[in-house]
Amino acid sequence: MAETGIGQRPLALASGVAHTTIGRILAGTVLCDIGTLAHLEYTLGRPLWPRTSSRRRPRTAKEVERAVATKPIDL
Image (tube, rainbow, N blue to C red):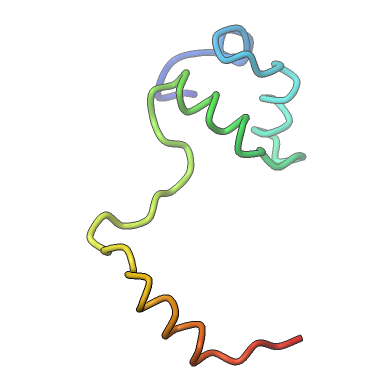
């Protein structure tokens, strides 16, 4: 929030996320769920969660099947 210059309450009003929730996330007392994360990212206009590398191509269905078949499952 320091990078954007927006405070907790204005961010709460703009994102629809309670300011108390934002405060708890920043304090590290709660984990951010995916919906809250999406609202905050959209409002701030920037990603808040690390993305996967764009250099890595998605696996094909055959590659996924091969990986699953070769890895033992621990129960």
